[in-house]
Amino acid sequence: VKEAVRVPVFANGNILYFEDVQRCIDATGVDGVMSAETNLYNPALFSGKVLPVWQLADEYLEICREVPTKINYIRAHLFKLYRQCLPQHTDIREQLAKARDLAEMSELAQTLKQRLEEQAKITEYDPSRIVVDEYGYRVYPPYICQPAIRRVFDKHNSTGEAPLGRQVYEENAVRLRDLECAQSLVATGGPSIPQQQQPDAKSEKRPNSSDNSEEGTANTSKKPKADKAKALKKKSACLLCHNNASAKCPRLLCKNCCREISQKLANHNAAELPTLPENNTRQVPFDWTSAAIPADCEAHGSRKTGASCFSESTPA
Image (tube, rainbow, N blue to C red; front, side, top):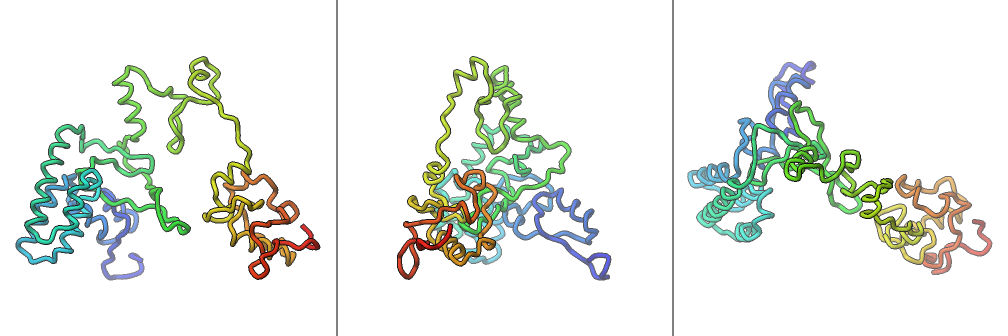
């Protein structure tokens, strides 16, 4: 776009840290970079400074004293500034939500400032050292201004748990897991978990089940594998969607999915069967084909008759 037009071009989007500004300019050749969402959580973004939230909050409230500002705007902005620390100070969060004037909010800001300053005194934090988590985002103490991390949206549950993730480009960045391992070496004189048994980011920290040593045998108890069908029913998750599966359904499906399968098989439309998610393929106790899918389902009868999904003359 920059090469195709003569007017100044600005870029924005996913500018989380000050270094992202230059990276965006280098990648796109734009004349400037904007930021909206991150600026709300960290107004010091373009300064390149790592500042505590109370310093930015005090400056913002001082501006509000000089420039008339609606109380709802002030409250919303403070909630964004204090996003990371309010979960630890729920009493301040509740009072801030009920505050009705600037004076009351300023008093709450000072109370929170005192608490955070005390926390900062006992927290070992070096602004010059960049530590990133397993998703690539920088790790800051809760009293430091930092961007809000967007998460993967789950359309089935309308929630988002896992962060989107970020490519780590900082050459001097330290992984949080490596830092914790190093700290444990210093504190205990040896690794709490042997290097060859370091679990990945998504697994629990436990001894390797394949270790045949006496220590591994003593600390690790192998549990017998449960029947796949029972495990799925206990989980109560439909194989095709995120709804609860019926415990009596032999296909391990919810009502809507089961009736849809019944209709397709009754019309001999085996080619139109929905694709089974890859994660569930290994767990299904039968082959996901028209010949192997259980032919009868008394749990989910026809919408009109309430009868079984298949008549006796319908082939499997």
